[in-house]
Image (tube, rainbow, N blue to C red; front, side):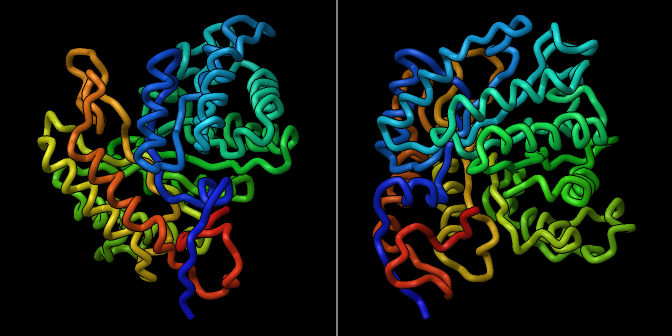
Length: 352
């Protein structure tokens, strides 16, 4: 049986499947970006929660940036997905930001203090960003699992038992040791008990249909992991192999740069991906949330224009496409079988 209900308040925002990447703005930029997120009806912002910014010196903590971000989100009813990551120079023998922590206790302490300080205001934490890429992580896959993911998850939950932990936020790339389809099942097998939701990143400049193909295609060797190097599997096939498909999955990065595809095409791709995944299709109910990359273009040369706002803050067509899709479906939330008609805390997607 299908039940159609409207959902309001905090529960609606937590259950919202709509997200956007916002980095870690401050001041007028923060207020403007979050105003635009709120106006579009987007329920979630994914922010960079940077260890190196908070604890630039051992045991000296400056939380002011994140206090400001949390306050701005709260007043607008936005939920935060915080990417907790990035090593201070004093805490590693490797490169700053990407280096393996010299003492895992330093990392654990930071994760504990962050989760404790923000309690119920940040309930969802994503542990690191694209650790299969050297640009973001200088260690090995095993280092990420043993020295980053497990310690962070344990510390966050020790500080806040209500917190939700996600990862590994892999880039959907294939080369050398970056092969996402080797990393993902390994992480889920070894540390899946620490995760409340799995996260992944998928891009394709050819459009939304190609993103969907990467997510759910049935490939020639999809059921034979030994042959994945010949023809890579889809994300769904890897999740089936890892026995994770019945647990929450968040697509925490996807999108199109307008300097590559054009503004009108970006809007078409937004509408296409949203329509394919967030209109209640029971065959596509395993993606719980989609976070597009990103809210606004950077005013820097040679940086792709991923934003749905231009550098001057004006709206691209994709902003209206996202806003209109949300508005159209806000009062038409389709609940899966098993929910009571009076339950106003869940959407058609699974909420951890």
